Length: 42
Image (cartoon, rainbow, N blue to C red; front, side, top):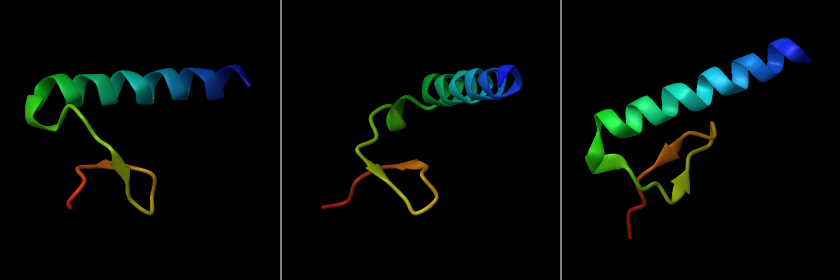
């Protein structure tokens, strides 16, 4: 359980770093099949 929590925190941290590194992709509204955030296309 403890290890799972650490992995989740790491994933969140990586996501935050990626969002800060790529300001154009800060706001994601859609998710693809794998659960990754992707920009929505109309």
